[in-house]
Length: 385
Length: 206
Image (tube, rainbow over the protein chains, first blue to last red):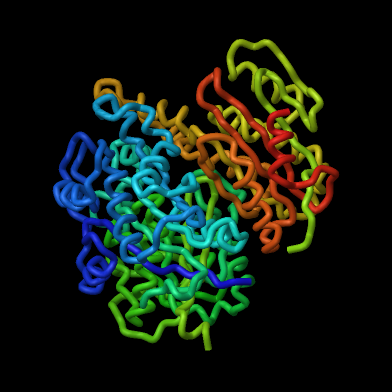
């Protein structure tokens, strides 16, 4: 069976408009979260990682758009444009497009939004992005709550292995909206401070926004220096509750087991875990339990939510891209916001950015509906030996 | 990779009618979806009080899934590795509009977690997984219309990679009382209908 790799990538975020500058900020422990005071979005000031509208417009208009695009479309197109350009790939009918998003253009449902309500259909988002780059195939849209961004990687791999496409571009994105903030607030999950994943002093989540893109390919000639091989994946359900994670971490445990089995590696060969870490008690505790069931209690783990907040359907891909750079730089990045252990099972939260040889990392995510995804990635040189 | 897969059984829910493997099992003339789906729920004898807390998309998908899975007479003693791969066009927009209505006007502001949780299309997959104890692969896709080719590829991939023993696939769309439709089919090593795009489309348009 042919190998599948992640290659050229981009992140559009409050920390910068390309992956390298974003990772540099993470290296320097600069958070993208700031206090936002905008009553149109939320009734009280809140922490978020909003993308600078002026800078976004500037970057987007360089691409010469000939019609109106929503904020999310501008983010995703700007991100994907960088990814496609740097890859040097010409779009043909052998190239697929996967869009991963939790809520897409949900802001157009607001009566005050000037775009037509039809734009809220995710297939319209797919068309908008796909037509901009003249993709020959319709976009496949993955909308599976907060695992969408990482699940999209598994989906891309599966379509390549099945021979449907030679290469797949994934574009992930979600925007900060009143819709999302009011909903999470109804669950009393929104923190009034920057979030503190796995920390005893945590007070809930922050919602943030990013767009992220990556090239998925089986062509070893299309790799760049941070490329990784996708060596195993799994996406299992908790079968427990629609809005609360399983107390035994069942779905996450099984997702990791499925990925390990496919990769044919033991759990102790994982050098680093890029976890979901939303900074809610339920999520963080569930992850600690699932990791310990795989004897991963001493494996270095971080959550990047302290840098971006929870960026919903984009978070899994964003964090995968940072993980790719983590491997390339042989560096474990700090889990920002963590002070004191706040989960009942031991986990090895990365407390300071550390240089360490890294070959294999595990990315996980979990979401409403009981969904979980785990994917194992490995550096290329090591797998070719 | 050489293993041949089949479509073992399939269900349709549309136009006030529920049919299993092409045979009508329930039909009524109720003017609205809520009354119709309640009647169908009673008729197929699904005893599951949580059903009444679900939004319309979940009710539709849950009932369709329940009918197929019950017809398989799966043993409750052992686990079943049946993946769920669903798709639609309108995502969870019907409930999204409800949540938006609850936050549109500051003087009439009433967002609720019971509504908000259903503003995700994959919640219906969670509902079926909980009832049937399916700790299996699951994914929700959005397409402009029913996309047999993509569903076929994805189900084939899950079976070839041994991620699942069977795959419950299909289309579950709820976009208002006049626009609802469920079509689910079970892909399995057993069965009489070949698992290919042509057959899937034939069953879908049946």
